[in-house]
Image 1 (tube, rainbow, N blue to C red):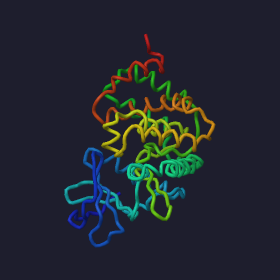
Image 2 (image 1 turned 30 degrees about the vertical axis):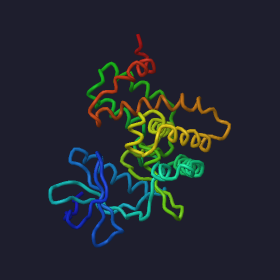
Image 3 (image 1 turned 135 degrees about the vertical axis):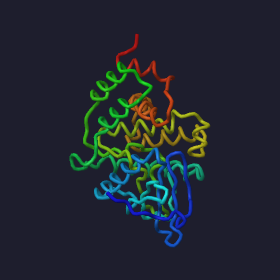
Image 4 (image 1 turned 90 degrees about the vertical axis):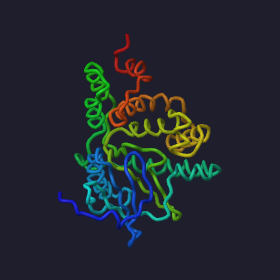
Length: 281
């Protein structure tokens, strides 16, 4: 596909991080540009493809537009801008007294996602996606890779929609109550536990200083949100401990999947991973 060339001077920087920057078009504030670093161009191509497919399924997400490049060759995607949006994480950090309402609405949006079954073949499976990343991980031995592949394919199958990077920062909402899924480059199909592992990781596992940096909340608030979310998603009588035990398995896999992208091994979880995949001494 030939991308349209744009002038970055026509856009004003509105935010950014390790995985890209966002800009607002100066003469049309209804247009958002998401620009990717050169080394993450494939992520941008994946997001363009999957954002369109998610949009066509009818799931709530920002309307994607054209694939573009800046004059220096950086890849970008134009989206219809969601004006006045706020992530659940940001809203919780600003209004912790709204925890119950926010956790309920976040859970309802997750349930909508996980009650959707895309047409077969529309998206890759989570198992395929995770295995591909595992095989490309420079920090894993061939023995670990083979054992992980066997383990991943032994997990339950499902044809459910899976966000692939689901957490309280990747669902946004507006004052009129509309919710939107964002950051769709890893959208896939499989058991919702792949998403549960990520939510668990981002609310319960990461260090408090990272929680503050990413989501502007302390561990106590983050844990309370997770607990309330679990009760709303699974039912008020659910055992949070049992949910966490199941989610932990998928959280470990998610950590491994991110090793190549982050450029460092997660040695602290290797003993537990080895137990899971049958490599423990």
